Length: 78
Image (cartoon, rainbow, N blue to C red; front, side):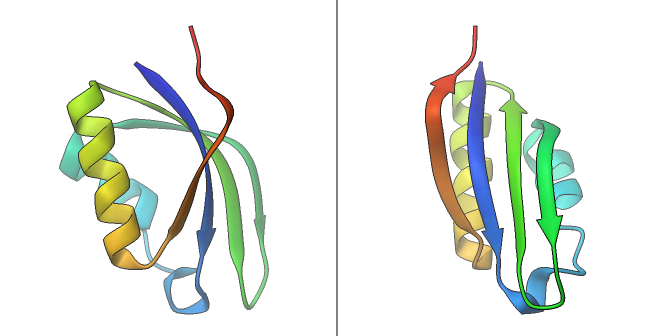
């Protein structure tokens, strides 16, 4: 299953390997479609691929870390 999400990172997480950690921890494959990072904010559009359960766990973990997660229109990709 694939989902497309927009992630907004708070300033304190910009330099942390959050995507890598989520990918390893929850067996999710990230595909970065677009990214914009400044000194104060980071924004990314990602396609995340994995089982429905792994995706749900990974997204929940991101939110718990303080990352704002929004499903992008047409979030399921065939």
